[in-house]
Amino acid sequence: MAPMGIRLSPLGVAVFFLLGLGVLYHLYSGFLAGRFSLFGLGGEPSGGAAEPAAAADGGTVDLREMLAVSVLAAVRGGDEVRRVRESNVLHEKSKGKTREGAEDKMTSGDVLSNRKMFYLLKTAFPSVQINTEEHVDATDKEVIQWNRKIPEDILKEITTPKEVPAESVTVWIDPLDATQEYTEDLRKYVTTMVCVAVNGKPVLGVIHKPFSEYTAWAMVDGGSNVKARSSYNEKTPRIIVSRSHSGMVKQVALQTFGNQTTIIPAGGAGYKVLALLDVPDMNQERADLYIHVTYIKKWDICAGNAILKALGGHMTTLSGEEISYTGSDGIEGGLLASIRMNHQALVRKLPDLEKTGHK
Image (cartoon, rainbow, N blue to C red; front, side, top):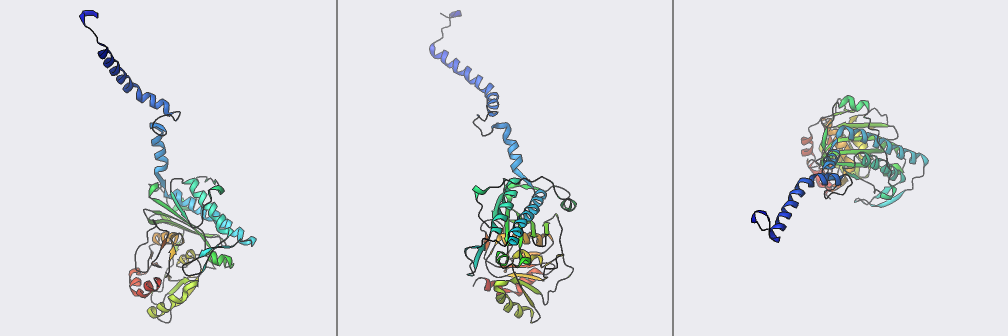
């Protein structure tokens, strides 16, 4: 018999025992979980204390740092492009046919440049989406460390960090633009390019010319190391177009601007954008407009779009629509690029080109 005449049934003892266990559990669960997390044994991945640190590392990226790494990546890729071309052993092969029926060529220069550029960017910014023209072979991975130094010319133009959510960033790499011309040893057209888009909008562009070692870069609402020319001819413009379909553009351009209009056939989208700018390169031709009338991949144009946008210029489809750098890797509506001109007026002048691009 219990003291005071109170009798404890087995059921009562069990209830009190379970209540006591519940209290002890709540008191010590936080302590135990914290201790277990040190060894990776907790129910939550990495434990409560480590998770905020991981989110801080992958949650945002600094566009100024991304610009520094993008410039370095374009230069490193360009070194591979130049080395392969000068060896004269290109290991050229075809990836198939383009929509226009031309050979879509690939060389060792494309592959080796792609490896350098992709892994440099991926090592520095592992949490961002990177789209590249060439296939990335995971078995051929190369760890390339960035020394975290931002060049002085970038620091001078962009004095403070510019952070954005990592999940909003898409990087577009073209490890060798103008591969066809590269195989023909037409070196002036060749570039390597990196573009960073935030929520589909191009904000950072790098175009590097491996054979003259000139690099143009710009950040929207940031700064640039390149500028527009002082004047452009809007009445009878010099129009730069693809070598493969200059005739399509010429017919419409002459009808629109008159017989004094000059058509400049050229290779490489990067080269064509630089033709609109003030570039200190003797081999760089100059143009007033850049027009493309057929399907084109986004890694070909994103860097140029970002640079033009940073300088107050425009790159749109032929119907005047802004280009989004998310989703599919190409655009159907051709493109029109200009700077220091009335871009929408040009769109209205060239309605037949948009139709030509869809034939």
